[in-house]
Length: 100
Image 1 (cartoon, rainbow, N blue to C red):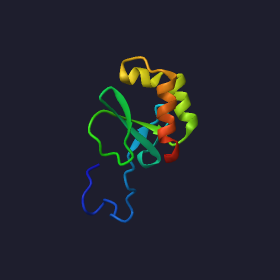
Image 2: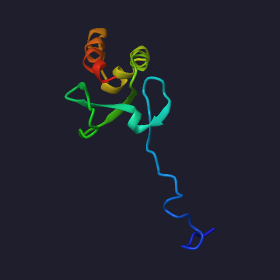
Image 3: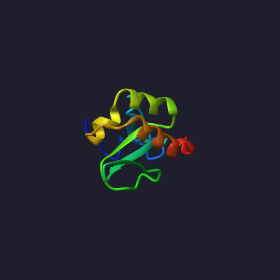
Image 4: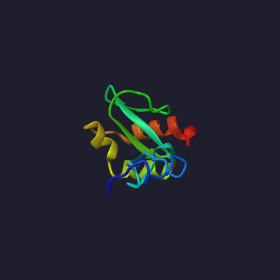
């Protein structure tokens, strides 16, 4: 069916598109604004609360549980393409814990 001005929904009736992203911890797709973005810079995981940093990013639920799931599944190692020590993961968690 071809939409014309006569049969399209008025702007007020249209549902607004909500960007969805997948959490690397629980692997659930959720609205982008409910997730926390990280980027990989200089071989390190850097929090990106404003979601404006350049580079490859990934999203994580704003919960310690999802962070721990990502650590358990070695998600950070896959993303960085190197071994990530438990101490590095704990240091990152300490940095982002206030943002949860």
